[in-house]
Structure formats: C-alpha cells, structure tokens
Image (cartoon, rainbow, N blue to C red; front, side, top):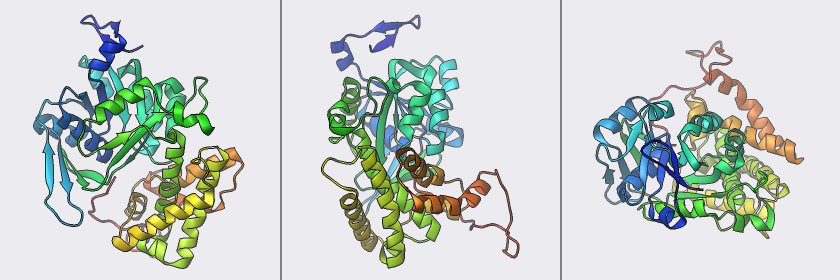
Length: 393
C-alpha cells in the first residue's frame, strides 16, 4: 500500500486515484554521472512531475545546495552545447540519509541507487530509513549482481532492477557534464513473490507493476531521458548490457587499448568475443536471454555494433580501463568477477573472465589499499600512470 506522512509523522494510506495524482518522491542516492543526469531532468520537469531528493556529499553537495544543480550537455558531431540549470532549493539536498532523517525529510517512494557497483549493499542498507511503507530502491549498476545484492539487504519486494546508459561525469562541484547522445534508463520488477528472480516466458509480463508504471510515468515527462519498462523483462535487459559492459571494460583494461584497437586487432577481438560468449552462455543457462536468441547470435550482434562505433570514434575507452590505468578502484570484481561467480553458480565455464580477474586483481587490491606494493626498477614504483583526467561514469 502506498502511504504518505501526516503532520505527526505517521503513515496515512493513499487511495489508488490519489496515488495516481500525487507526484512521487524520488531520491537520487549519488549525484555523479547517472544521478546528476536523472536528477537534473526530473527537476527540469518541475514539482508536478516529482519531488526530488538528492543525496550528495562533500563539495559537490555543498555547491548544489548553494547554487543548484547544473547539467551541461556537450554536442556530438557538432552543434551548440546546452545547459539545464536548476535553482537552489528546487531539490532537497542532504549529505547522507542520516542527515535527511535528522532534518525531518519525508519518506520517499523511490530511491535510485546511483552509486558504484561495490557500494550497492551499503547504499541499500543506508536507504532503508528513508523508504516509505511501499517505497523501493532502483538499481542502475553495470553487471548482473546489483538487484540481488539490494534484495539481500532489503528484501526482494523492495527492489526494482534497472539499467542506465549515459556518458556523464562530475565536471566540477555542482556541475555534471554529459554527451548529447541517447541516454537510457529502463527498469522493472526483478523478483517473483517468493523472492526468486523472474525468468522464462513470464518474466516480460511480470516486469510491469503499478509502482514501475508510476516511476515510468514521471520519467516520461522528462526531456533527454529515454526510459520505461523493458519489453523482454528486467533480467534479459541486465544480461544483454552485461554482454557488453562485463566484457569490453575488463578486456580493454587488461590490454590497455581503446575500442577501435580491441575490436580491430584479430587476436584481441577474439579475446573480447570469448569473454562476451561466456556472459551470454551464463544468461542462456539462467533463462535470461531474449526469447529465440542464442548466445552466438547475441554476441555477434553486440560485437558488430561495437566495431562500428570504434570506426566512428577511435580512441574511445571504458571507465574500467581509465580507472585501472590511473590507479583508481575499478569495477573489475563486479564485472569479470561477477561473471565468474555466476558461472560457478550456473555450471558454466568462464576461463576468460577468470583469467582477466586474476591478472588485474593485484593492481585492484593495491588501488584499494588492501595489498600495497611497489615495482622495483619502475620510476615511482607504481603499476599505473598518474594523470589529471576526468573520468566518464
């Protein structure tokens, strides 16, 4: 049942008609690339679309409180840049859930978890006190583990699974920059009533629900956001993206090479295809591939698209490569590591992802401060470069 808070802080039931008329309260937990893009577009739509709560830390959060949130949209292939500037006070801005609760923030209907993949469980636990009686979190992360991680903390009934695709990053405190190309956010129910992941022929229809439709309705009024409930089901959507994201990023990081070289050098292309095929094979075994498509067909289609993009945009790099090259914590354990774990659970061999994870793990542990080391004979002793580069999220 949907509810709102009375002046005394107690939940009051909301009727179906009232629920449809009331704008949802939507919190963005994390206001980086994904959160900043969605938050800006929701705020641009106005209070009749949604009440917006931003959880943003440090200088970024302070700048948003003082000056409002700005989204700069950079043109692709020419054209003029545009900006969306929201006024200070248009959104409730807090540095943490604890601060929001302490300041008497009203409970939210949806909390979009726009955090790093390794922060999902922690963010889900932190979100609990700010969720309304029927409130839920919506995952956005790469890989295939985020919905289950959130469900393990909150319960499956509190989770919608989602996929976000946008090239965006924090340009400076209070400002998020994104590329002017199609930006997607799709989401839906991921679990059955008994808590098991939705799978098979019934998954597509079961992805739709009143709450998913409510969130989709709010986002339908936002410019610059292509969103909605996936036609083929939530898990097939997650796995389809994983074929790309769980393979290209790790392979590019291992090879220290951009998209055009990863796809254009035959031996490296074969490595990428092998990694993709392991992901698609796991999806097929879990009954999460799109109906009537086999792993080889899915992989060849994704690889063809990637190859064409590399020709058009030579030098393109994924965030995993940039993080590894610059000595930052990366998502390698959630991408290749997640596929390796899925393979063991499903009985699917994943030798390519096992190798990539093993090869990159020493530097990953170093980046996280868990196993520091220096390379003798290397200036500075670090296995990476140091550069003042902005990282796309």
